[in-house]
Length: 311
Ligand code: SF4
Image (cartoon, rainbow, N blue to C red; front, side):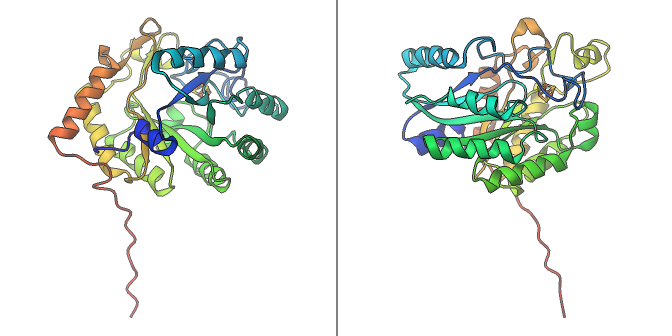
């Protein structure tokens, strides 16, 4: 095994394949509604990130049952994790949050995955998740958008939070015994390979359970899109991107599960996405490099603790 694949991890844990079902709630984000900012992160489009899910106006139960029917027919699947994907899913009235989670209860659902911002996961929301775990025997994962650990980059992309909020969120989520999945963008134009490697090391040191790595896509009508069209940013080549991924894999802990290595967005909405290549082709390129060069996850990971020499 070259790296810890999410699909393998799920099979080990549940004894069979488990599928994540994306669900879109009609919610917003503090970086859009004015609490933190109005313009949002510079890469985020009006639609947020929920490209693969149904429209948020559709009832949650309908979104779930339709997706289950589809996946059941196609893959004979029996177990699912409901993934509250778009915007900031803990940025709503707490009763509405609980009500939305309750709608995800289904005999074939084994877990909930809640996507949010590191500055939006306060204790009352974690308590609601704890209630879901105890009452309905569900595994809980919180997905945190971090994107970069470089504070200058976080400011450039207008995240509206720093690394400290992320560390604080991870520690509080772990106090409840929930898993954390962190989203990172591997090739933000202001980040170096060293920034990205250090991000992996920070996640590893915090005991973050899994990571979703995204390749930057550029959506039309966003600030990032304007910068791209005006030639103000440069995106590294796909060869350099794969080199970054390899360095990342080598420098993270062996335990961390990797949920993905590339971002995905509909072609018609983007000015740039995955160097015009399919996600599958890039994945194959990465996997053959890992094989040819005999790369293994964690082989360069170390956290140095120098012992003071007392005499
Ligand atoms: S935090 Fe998420 S939803 Fe909000 S603006 Fe940024 S990417 Fe978009």
